[in-house]
Amino acid sequence: MNTGLDLALASIIGGVLLLLLVNMNSRVADETNRAYTEGMPVVVTRQIKMLLDYDLLKIGYGLIRPRMAITQADTNILAFNYKPTKAATGDSIRVQWQIMYPVVNKVTKLFPNGRSAKDSLPNINEGFVYRSVNGQSQLVSYGMTRFFFNYFDADGVQIGTPIDSTNRLRIKMIRVTYRIESRYRIPKPGERTTPAWTDTTAFPSINVQKMYRPRNLL
Image (cartoon, rainbow, N blue to C red; front, top):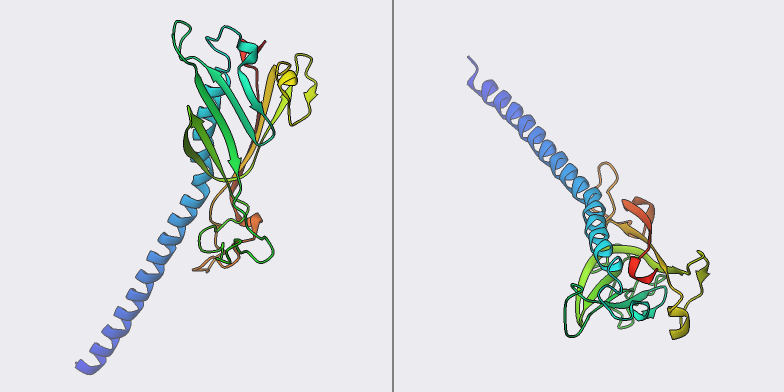
C-alpha cells in the first residue's frame, strides 16, 4: 500500500467534496435570496390592500354629513374622516394616505447633500407610503414605485386634481393604482453581488388597480 498516494487521493477527494459543499451552500443562499426578493412584493401588496380596503370603504361612516368626509384629495394624498361605529360619540377619526419619494438625482444617484443613494436606496425608483391616523404617521410600505389616486363623480366622470372643497363633494368613487417592486433586484446566474441596481427590469413587481365605492358617499 502506497500511503503517500492514498493520502494524496484522500486530499483530492476531500477537496472536491468541500468544493461541492461550498457550491451547494452558495446555490442554496442564492435561491433563498431569490425567494425573499420575489416574495417581498407579494407580502407588501397584501398588507396595503388590507389597509386600503378597511380605510377607504369607511370614508364618512358614522358622520352626520358624510359627503364632507374627504378633507384633502390629490393624486398623491387622500385625507378623510370616519367614526369607528355609528353610535360613537366625540371626535371622528382622521386618516391620511400619502406617498413620498426621496429627493434623488437619478443621473448622479446622489441626494442633495452628496450622499450616495446606492447604499441606502437599492431601488432608486422606490417611494414610501405613509398612513396617518389622527396625526400619528406610520410607514406602511416599502418598494412602492407608483401610487396615486383618481377620483370620479356619480356618473363615472373623472374629477381633475387638485380637487377644491366644492369638487370634493362630487367624489363618489376613488381609484387607487400602485406598483410594488422588490427593494433589490434578482442577481443574474453566477452573480454574488447586485451591481446593476438601477436595472428596473430586474426588480420583481406587482401592479394593482382597484376602484372603491364608499357607500357613505353615494
